[in-house]
Length: 371
Image 1 (cartoon, rainbow, N blue to C red):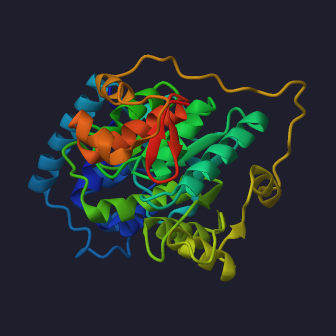
Image 2: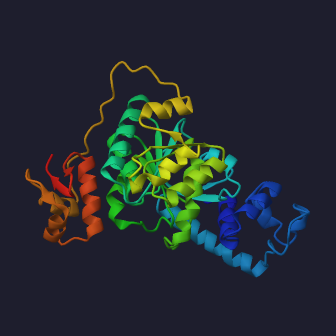
């Protein structure tokens, strides 16, 4: 059964899309979304200084949005999606505290604790290099030894994002993907196998209702959630411009820690990270130990090291097609694409997945073979 607060929060968010900061201010005056709805025709009673040009609620229009909210809530109930309102104990408390336009409602599917003791966002370029992949894998493996409940957050995009999610899963860390669309779809679709595993060891989170397309502005807008949920944001490779730098800037504005992995001066993929570090916008990180020191995390004593287990070797149909093209002899990526007749992004994503599962090995020159 969906509460009136959930329905009210969804309806208000739909009605005042793009006015998140003003809506949050009204919410703080009213104390709840339900109170706003109940005073829709006399908002001045709960907020005397409210700008009625911004928050004029038409009764007929309100009824329409409340009906849409009921439909949205029913879809969530039917598909195992939790609706987290600002007053919910499961709502990310750090996001609620630091984000001035924190959504009145979040849609969440998964089992990870969004208020875990330690939460780290890992973001970066969509065109990651071998160096970037290695840094993500190594850092996640090192952190997993000390903090097996560490939650890794990212955006499920190509490159650093998906590398972070897969490294977390490989090292048995929970991981949550923050999406730029509704939970009735998945973008990019090539990451659906990873996303499915995340639902059992992490989750998927979004502020967008169903039928919301993954348009460009949504990706930039969702970056504030990636920054605000986490204790700190780590940038692993960023070109001169990119969404990861936006996430880092937002985290700095929120007063949260920002860290970055340095790269060679000649590496285009590291220009953004090097500049962040040079401008004191991020602490330098070369290993998990740097993260622990920067955040002053206490390192627990371990009698024996935690060794990550391999995924079960149950391959999807696409993974089987790509895997069959690998042998002990190096094979160029272009040859694998040609042999499989699969789209380039699908082959690249699948090979990266196989690599994380220790079923494929990438070599210099865009070549791959069995490990």
